[in-house]
Length: 93
Image 1 (cartoon, one colour):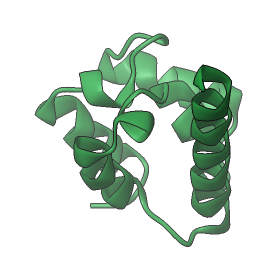
Image 2 (cartoon, rainbow, N blue to C red):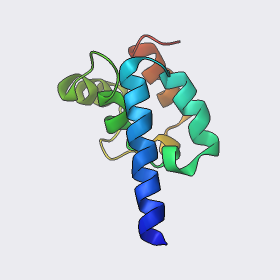
Image 3 (cartoon, one colour):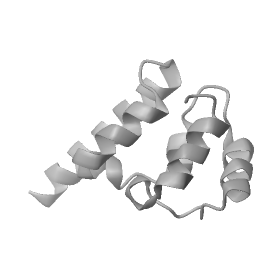
């Protein structure tokens, strides 16, 4: 049962990252969804940012550092100001 649940969570996260990459969902939509969806809420911020179009590992880490977000921070753990700073930084308001 736990293996099935874990596989489902991985599939869901991979699907979401792909949607971000293709531009069919936005960072703002992801933040909204994460409030209700525990699987998305537990995703690491760094992994999400690296999935955005034109954002690589270096850019994602640098922006997180500028904003003051730990590399290990998860979506659910972000404060309102951190979310707003990310939205402004990555061009989606």
